[in-house]
Image (cartoon, rainbow, N blue to C red; front, side, top):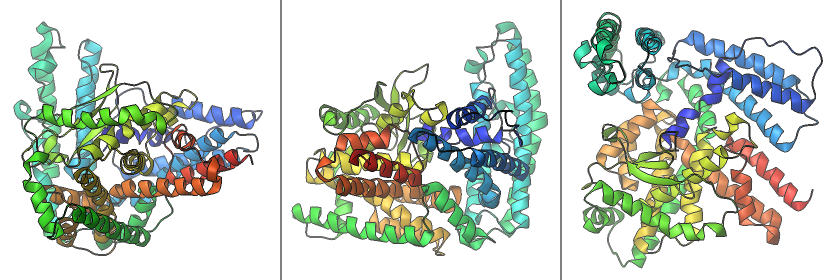
Amino acid sequence: MNRAARALGALLAGLLACQPAQVSPPATAPAPSAALAQIVAEVTAARPQAAVLPDVSLRVAQRQADSARALMARLDRLPTAGLSHEEELTLELLRWDARRRIDEPDVYWYSFPVVTAISPMRTVQVALAGLPLGTDTERKAYLTLLEQSGGVLDGIREKTAGQAERRIVVPREQIDLNLPYIRSFAEPAATHPFALTGRRLEQVPEGERAAFRARADRVIDSVIAPRALALARSVEELRAIAPAEVGLWQYPGGTEAYRILVRRETTLEVTPEQVHEIGLRAVAAINARMQQVRDSLGFMGTKAEFHEQLRRDRRFYVRTPDEVGQGLMQYIARIEPRMGESFAVRPKQPYGVRRLDPALEPSMTYGYYNWGTGKDSLGYYNFNGSDLDQRSMLMAGAIAYHELVPGHHFQINLARENEALPPFRRSAYYAGYNEGWGEYSSSVVAAEMGMYRDAYEVYGRLVFDMFFAVRLVVDTGMNHYHWSRQRAMDYMRENTLESDVQINSETMRYSTRSPAQALAYRMGRETMVSLRAKAEKALGPRFDLRKFHSAVLMSGALPLYLLERHIDWYIAHEQGN
């Protein structure tokens, strides 16, 4: 849901990649706190300051793993006796991200850079679009980066060829779906995705525009387009060996790779089998609760019939994007006066909603949250404003509370504004924590504050619950239990209110684009509910919900296993131990 934060989730990983393989220790070892601060400062200073193009080669993954091992060894030598609790969290976060890089070569072959949604060429487009063109130096930097982007296409082709040698080939259906995107980079300069438009060229002095564009066009035609054509041809050749089935289970080593990804994405020591069972239990429980709501409405038909009735009920639809925004914000206006009941601190950052870039809407089921930048001081939930005659507002409250208050906007900006945290912790993203907090906020906190005020609003929240619970079943089903995509689609169709278009997109996501990533949402929520119950039981009448929420939020995003340790510390602290 939170695309901007997700992009920053790789921040520390990127910093680790820039670490030298060996770092000489100082002549006199500093105290533990100072030694840790020195490591954090070095990691932060190693952050790339200029646009860096993605390199998808195994060589880079192995080099980053070697750097992470060197950093891990240094962290292991660091004494911990004098560290504060927050410093211990910082140390463990450095270790977690180092372990992630160390694991990367083991899962390297199981992601597919030819898939549009995760294509490195999307990163290239963002990098080029972000470069200024006002000075001669800036334009030279742009042309250099443009030329280097041809190497990204070569890297994708190299990885895809290596996958084919190992019998790890993107499913056949995905080849046809993603070839048009690859072929777009083989277009001539005039119609190329990197073509410099009139608005972009306005940054260039008028007398130099024609020459600059001509140089850029030559790079596109002579460097980029031929490489993209070679990549497209190599992908076309995969049709003969591409599997009809989906899921990591079918590839050599895929079962173990999926186990690693499940642990990585959930940030918990759990197995695919455990996640699948948790999902089945959650789906059954939500179905039972849905039945209770239907009974309360006096509906006598089946769940499928009720869902069809909801799809046809025009009171849940609006006509314009402005009405979508108004509908979302009415729920925020409802909860704002009550926030002090559950939270002792609040972020200063203002927020709002706005429509997504329409060009992105076909590829996104809902939308994403993005915090404010120097150009725009508001944190926005960017909602999907397309196909409004098919886009029910039944779940609008659930979405608003997940994305804004007390969900992503609230959590992310409390961390960003907390100057007591090291910079990398203020912008950290761990899907299990960040998305888990969004779901805990929307399903638990908002509900107990009475934000779902009639049976249909309650049912909309349950529909959202079901969406995330079903993911646990179908993601593990396709990647571990040999489910076909059709079986997964049928399961989603039976249990969710999603359209066939959305179900098609979502099952592609779980099986091919990003296996295990979608598990984080519900697993994070389950963890936070469990930790709250643990604190309530341990503290009894001393339990203070506002203090518990501060404990969860004020240390920034944490891997869920580390959040569990942190809440144990909080409980002991409250008990006076």
